[in-house]
Length: 273
Image (cartoon, rainbow, N blue to C red; front, top):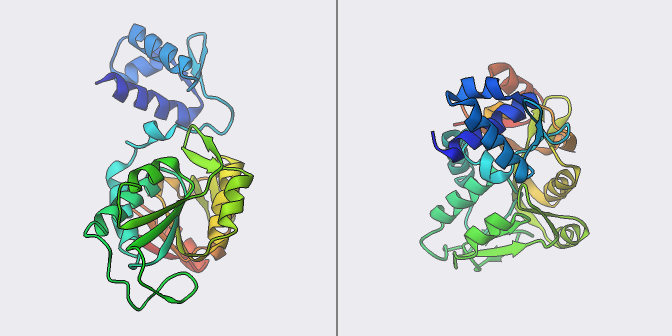
């Protein structure tokens, strides 16, 4: 197991329980306690955890893995979800994307889908209902990594929101972000979330990211949530919106039948891929 793989596993174990003991981690990863101590020390230097006597604890109650470490979790499921979500987007539409590993995969799937150049959008109604002959796709995002990946695609128009960058997720937040989103109209927004609850709706770990995602939903005609089934029934600190605002949830086939029933009862269509 490489160092990166060990670090990823250690952070996942820490995210699950909030604390980690050296001996417990050494057994789980089948490495020496000395190796785990060095790994924890290095992760602490990067401020990804807090070292304690005999182990480590997470930063705060709502622990959030940085995007670069979350990217390998449920990778196959996220790619399938992303491809299904990208297939829902019509040429010429204006699409909002918030930050996260699943929405990053959606951006990559969109780039591949529209890779042939400018789509024939004559007669295609974009935001506002008027026929357009512009770029194959317009993407509005507050995620720096998504903007960076799509900026090299000349067939896709990229609009970034501005704002203050959060290093954990590369998302831009704050008044500058709000100012830009208040001036745009979206055909569809694709939202990544940290939790889905039948009573509370969809949630994020950070309140500033949740408020931006909520505004994305308010500016869009259609709201699509993309999330792997591990987020179902999970709660996070900050509420984005209720299920009544969501048109479609795209997830993997691991979703429990009772969760599908709850979402359907709330008026949310579910696509499991």
